[in-house]
Structure formats: C-alpha cells, structure tokens
Image 1 (tube, rainbow, N blue to C red):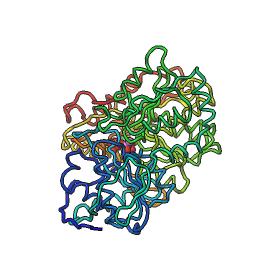
Image 2: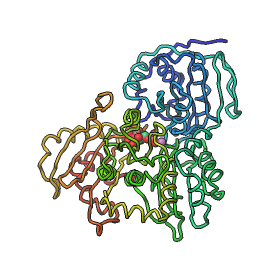
Image 3: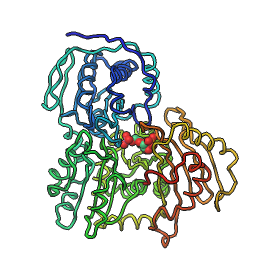
Image 4: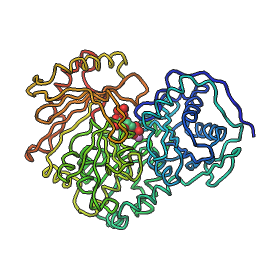
Length: 544
Ligand code: VG1
Ligand code: CO
C-alpha cells in the first residue's frame, strides 16, 4: 500500500457558499484544486478514523473522476469504509438518508444542484455531517480557514474502482461498498406515505401524472418509485436518464427552465399533476392542470394537510421557512397553534430545529420542501406528499390551493433574479441599500408605509450561533415585504435576488397574475435599491 503525501499550495477562493463549494468545471480540474478542498475537510474533522463515509453525486460531468480521487484520498486519510452510490449516483436527499441509516460520520455530495453541467458548466462539493444535513457554518468556516493554509494532501496509489458493479472491495485498508442508489431512499418513502392509496390513484385510469427529471439525478429514483413501485404507466417519467450535461439544459425546476413540462401542463386536456426536480434531486416544482403552485404555497398546503399522510398523522411539531419564503406557512402555523421559525437562506439552518424536534416541515421559496425524515430538502418526497394528499382528497390541485387561499388568504409572491451582474455593482447596490435602512422606518414608499427595514440577523434557537447580513428586508404596515439578497450559489459575477410578497385576504381578489398583483412592489424595489441605475438592467433575467 502506497500512500503519497503531495505538496500543494492554497487557493484563495475555496469559501463554501449557500450550499457547498461551487465553481466552473475547469476550476475544479485545476491541479490540486479538488484535492486541496477534500483534504481540508478531513483536516478539520476529528474522530472519523475507521468510520463510514457516504459518497455520491448528481452524475454531472466530472462526477466519476472526482469520486475516484476522493476514494483514494479517503483511504489515505484513514476512513474505514465508504458507501458510494452505483455509477457515482446519489441524490442529495438519498445521501442524507444513507448517512443517517448507516450512522456514517458524514457524506461528500458532488453537485452544483440546479446550475448547468458539462465541461464548461459547474461542479460542486458539499460536506454533510452525521445528522445527514449540510455542515453548519462553524464547520464550513473551519474548512475555508484550512484551505487558506493547506500545504499537503494524502492520496493512495491505487486502481480506480468499478463504480457500476454493486458490492464490496478493498482499497488499501479501506472498504468500498458500491450500493444501490435508490433502495434505502425508496424504503424510507414507503414508511412515510400510503403507497397503496397512491397506487390506486395513479393506476385508476382517470388520473395522469407527469414527472420531468430534466436528465438529472432523480430519473432512476422516479422510475423505480412511480413506475415500478406505484404502477404508473411507463413514460410517466420523462428525461429520466441522468446525463453529464443534463442534455444541455438548466436542471432547475421552475416555469422558465422546465419548459417542456410547463407546455404539457398548460395545454388543453393537460395531465392532472406534473412535477419536476433539479440536478441533485432536492428541489421540486408542483403543477396542476393549467395551474402552477408556488413553492411557498406548496409548503403551506403540505402543512395544512399533513395529518392526511401516514408519516405525519399525529401532527407537526412546528414549521420552519427561510426568511425570503412567503409567510403563507406562518398563517397555517398560527391556525394550528404551531411554532413557526424564520431562518436564513440555505438548508443548513434547518438542521438544529429538526434535530431537537422543534420543526417537522421546512421550506424555501426556491422550490425546496422537506421534513425531519432526512436533513436535506427533498424533491420526490414533496411529489409523493402531494400525491398522497390528492389520493385522500380526490380533488384537483387547483381546487385544493384555491380552498387553501379561501381559508388562509393568499400570499402573492414572486422572485426576480438579476443574474451575472458585475460583482462590484452588486456590492455597491447592497451597501447603498443597507446605508438607507435606518432612515426608512415610518416613511412612505409609493402608497405604503414602512413598518421595519433591516438586514436579517438570525440567532439559532438551539446553539445560539449568530448569522448576520442574511438579506435586507423592508416590511410595510399591511404585511407586504420586499427582500433583497445576493445569491451564494452562482459561479459567474453576482446574482441579485429580489423577493416580493403581499397578502390578500379577499377571496374575490385571489388568483391574479402575481406580476400584476405585485406591480407596486416591483416599482418600489427598483426605486429604493436603484436597480436599473446601478446595474444597467431594465428587467430581471429570471422571474419565478
Ligand atoms: C439558492 C436558493 C436557496 C437554496 C440554495 C441551495 O441559494 O435561493 O434557497 O437553499 O440555492 O439549493 P442562493 O444563495 O443562490 O440564493 V440547491 O438545490 O442549489 O442545493
Ligand atoms: Co438542488
């Protein structure tokens, strides 16, 4: 056995963002770039010698090569056993499930999620801890500090592992087990949902389901669960083969990038239920026949109907949402007498709340929903949750959401993204906006009075850690809000996200186009943040 110690020099740009380290593929292919980051993870962890690590990714370009490198480095660093998904495939929620089931010390997930892939696309590395969730900030900061000074890494000289062959083998003193990517996850889903009831619905002949996996990681999961286990007709899952470049598309389930599904669902005689998921399988989009469900509403509807679903029949402990997510879920929490938590953007902030049992359901406006069954958001879980509700209520998606609005009021919601802005301009915009905040309270913007204006700061209720500067929010006295923050997942320039929300209790005013309903706030956002003037952009690149 030959373990080599390779001398290296630090890279200055290995700071993990909202969800791991994301860079363009050529950056990750730079000599020692991946190795430095992986060694930095091992260097900051204690007590993992001889223990189990989970490894897998979303199948994007460079996934297989990166897995071979990480296996050899894990062996050289004293890991006892690595469970790796067959073909290098593990969706993010499946990785979380496998970490928990095997009491692994952690997992390395290779993904840049919804970002495009391929030789010129993006790649990413995320470290998850033993609870199955994304490493908290204290861990990611420690990794980053280590990357700044790292001067060597360890790697075993060894043959590559055949990732397509299930079974165990040894690499130096480490065991490598290639596992079925889907089995553990599918088994967990069966414990949460009423599969026989969903099967009745999807095989009834009067309900049509469409699942677009966008050539990303959920293909094999969706085929096994919907077509094989639940009996939906072959072809229910489209774009179901994971491709290294996702077929050239953005594996991002929203109205812009999941256009094939959107065309199908907004045609005459459309199917009853459509869904899509992202690159790594943690996001979901839910569409009814000619009806789009916003992610914020989806969280609220799941919460309001949770007791119809076996895994949640005893009710919820609490609900958590990221700050920019609409307050639709808060209204459900209030009515059900549940605690509701508002966290910064990124799933890592839900981990503590889930671990101590303060929250059961969590959600983000960015097409992310999940629960305490794993410690990641979970795309197919959300689809199954909806199907279970539909099977119980026997109503169309649209009727369920409209009834929800009639009960709780409608939170109009939209996010406007300005992608690829020059970083300096984006920073100037945020700085100027921050400087204005103290003088805004009580003033009029348009016809609305500012109730509060601040930069969101979060104190974790479990470990008291504080995360500052998590987004500028301007709230008005009628409950509406405009939120501004810069993305932490992009790899080119900066992306400004503007989140717009208003509340409409009057049923006769429900169901309008959100861009019309939110027009006043779109204007206010531009004026207060000087978006056009400072970025030169007269409209967003993506509206969701
Ligand atoms: C985005 C979303 C955020 C999500 C994150 C990771 O982050 O806004 O809600 O948790 O992506 O999702 P940002 O910093 O770009 O706004 V995934 O599916 O990309 O792991
Ligand atoms: Co994702």
